[in-house]
Length: 114
Image (cartoon, rainbow, N blue to C red; front, top):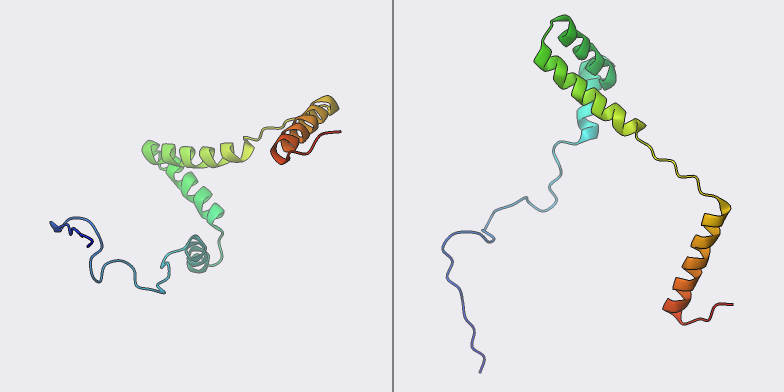
């Protein structure tokens, strides 16, 4: 005979009837949708153009707090785009990696290396 124990809920946590999103529901807001609406409502202006326009307005109005926010926003985007790391390896390094990979693969598969 199996003994089952039931925990009595105190009304906290767990699933509730009718809670959550309904099956088949869609995301109501998407990035693409937002950008399309911006494009539509600004008579075809691109988001980047609007961003620069607003940045220049903040600068011309001498609103230092808003200007700082625009600087941070733009610089974060620019720095992420510019921060690239290039690794140039010589043929010796490439050959050493090939040999190490072949050795590790041989150990994993049990095939002797020639």
